[in-house]
Image (cartoon, rainbow, N blue to C red):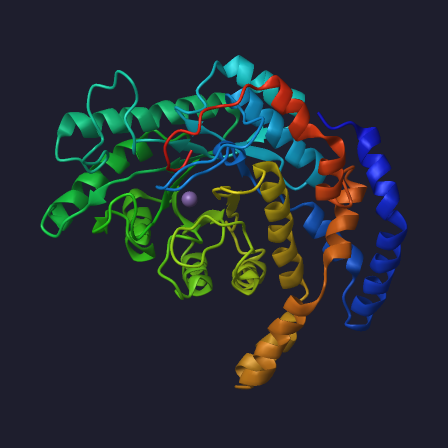
Length: 424
Ligand SMILES: [Mn+2]
């Protein structure tokens, strides 16, 4: 994997520069009345989960171009996730996707322990058929017109809960592809009634300390309608199911220009924000690297999260959900984990008393300038120092490239065929 001595060697090259930058930023923040050590401590405690499927190369409906040394199974994936956490110290947990990652519980636990990772939310898959499956999901799963198909989808979700409980997971995220491709194809109300009835059966199987997350998405894989098309429907589901059900916000699952930070604020206000799938987008569910297109939007989301810190029951789950089509997935996930922490650190710098005063005084310009003061601050020295002090890399990308990890695993893992498109 990545030896501590290699990280030390690489850090030695960056240490003098980092120390100077950190001290300068500390002095600058002190003039603004901010204690840099307090911000660094919060950043260091902030973790974001990596999805197991994220370490494989993604694809589009056109094609998929596999990289070298692609993980062959969940144990290779856990190795790759271990590398990401070793260098960034920002990704302590992995989110499994069942059945893609199905393996004996004892083996999963042993591997996770070996690479120093825990397990985050479990993800069920009823959007594609598995070999030997009795009923097809071509026309839906939890909302399918056929009762036996719905029962099969419910049973799969309950299997995911039972597996996750043995792994130490505390949440289930339901993934569905249910919807329609033509006007008139489905009866909106009857379809949603069937969905709710099935989801209630899954909810009933939740352990007392678990949460159930549902994700809204306005299109894909269905192109005319989806069952959970927007945050309003998502909120209705969480309300119908009960207190353990909350809404997941995937940043890419909205129409362009949607005010996502406002959706986040609404869900927080009513205790229904379950968490995030972080990514970035330009046009649709592009699954681009977090913060790569619109870092200000990411900051505005975190501005709402920092504002809500300390509210009773406020504990959103954070996960990256991206498709890496042209980059080394490990590099993209490392950079993205750092981008999430960056937005968090910038949001921590916002002077909340000054912001409230500007809002209450109808000083629109000063209110927005107050946000910009947080966003414009280069917090990289805080992020790097937090990594260094936790045993990680000052510059994860530099250390990763110096390690030669990709070439090492490429020699051990046979190349896979290009295959078709789609998320992998
Ligand atoms: Mn997602």
